[in-house]
Image (cartoon, rainbow, N blue to C red; front, side, top):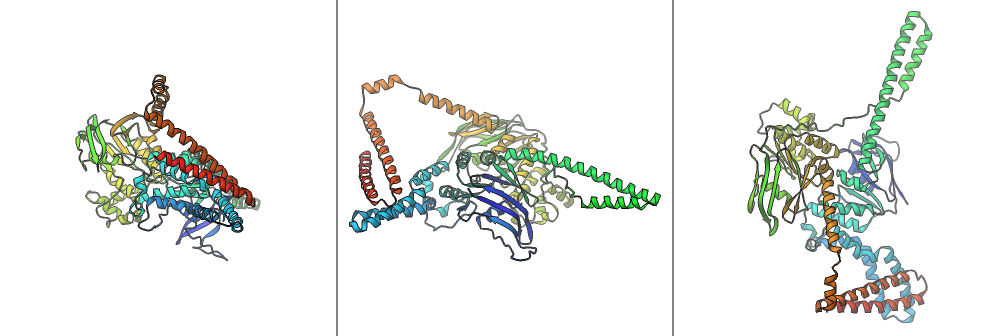
Length: 638
């Protein structure tokens, strides 16, 4: 077991003090989430651990601008960081990038094959030396997990839904999101001692996220995650480190446990603060009274007591008032008027894209004031549905329309502005008749304060772009909100503010999201894209998962139900296909036995040490078993 630790770390980014007196410990096998507002230094902490971000400690007397403290990352630990996207040769395929995770084992396997060839033709004098090398290489191969490469590769490709066509694509031609997902797969195959994941659920669909959750729960090394996906953090982490006020505080448990402990901690600190304020007021009143008495009685004794109490008050370690309301967006969503009862209607909707059928005779009805989420795997047609709904694309057949009286606000997944040379204030006022003072006051609700309103749009972060887009959309009152992945690029505080505003919205809400925590809080109905249809489920994401599990249980029970009459008929009248199937099953069983024997032999060879006679016997036996295995595979293919 080893420990990763930060001890009183102070970190500057240029002249800006980002982290101050930061301390925490993470032990081998722990899964940790790091949370805090955007810009607080979460990603910087990961980069410091990975050695990507320089830690400029000045040897000697410290001065402003130099980093300070101690970062301990065990030298023997292999560290991997997701955020980086390496550059590979232009002709390298996705599967070749993934296989780079097994470079060590592949090199050892090549060495073993070469030694085997040499041993076939070696004279007795050379054989002992070759056997010794072979034993050493076999032990190294087993230690490196060489016998598990194929299983590990297939497991991760299936979990992340890497299809054969995708694996054979050039890595260079992938989108940024696809590249990130491939690098995630490579890191999981590599199995580092310390796995650093920065927003790992971005670009993954729900199925892949749920697989990743299960995988990380079984992970043997340290896992450190920066994520705004609260549901993911709930499922995976067992400790949360909060970055607040440039320092860190650790909490046991998952994200929900952290929120509960944080609320209790703030409640206690507020009570302590109020008690201290009461004591300070009492002391100040006592000092004032003592001075008054001293003046009236002309008694230095009262002056000395007042001075003593004043000194005690000045030396008191005064508490800061706990921050109850975090700084964030101050949204107010006011619905104006109302639509007809049927706000969104799809009838016999058909749509194909690049030869793939997305919707086939799909129907949907969303009523006024419903809060509905649309879910489905990546590529299932969620964004296409919204584009058709808004008239950006047309249906092949059928009808999709918005009801009468609707005043629509649409937040797209990719936020774009016509003129990125304009600043925040100019962009907001473009086409709106509003005085500058009122515009700045309104923008402050979206956390654009002071000179920040003069920042060019081109310089805004993803989260700031979303806030600016929201400010413009919500300035004019609406009664139908259509949102495509609204939580992307927002930190947790901003997401929670958005949730609060949406919960109070009196109009109709239709949205797409992979954020299951967000869905649980906002949605009252879930529409799933299933085989080209729009299937409705009442409730939130957890309710939907329960219904899916019930369906799977019914299917499993039906599949496992015995059919004795059919089996009897097959036994009485076996046809050629049945006979061949039985033969294949028999061969597969024999192959399984031989593969098990080979694994046992290789394990024994790794433990032989200097017993070259025993190693030679095992080597011969291995060749015999391998030849038998090859023959069985050939018979399977005939």
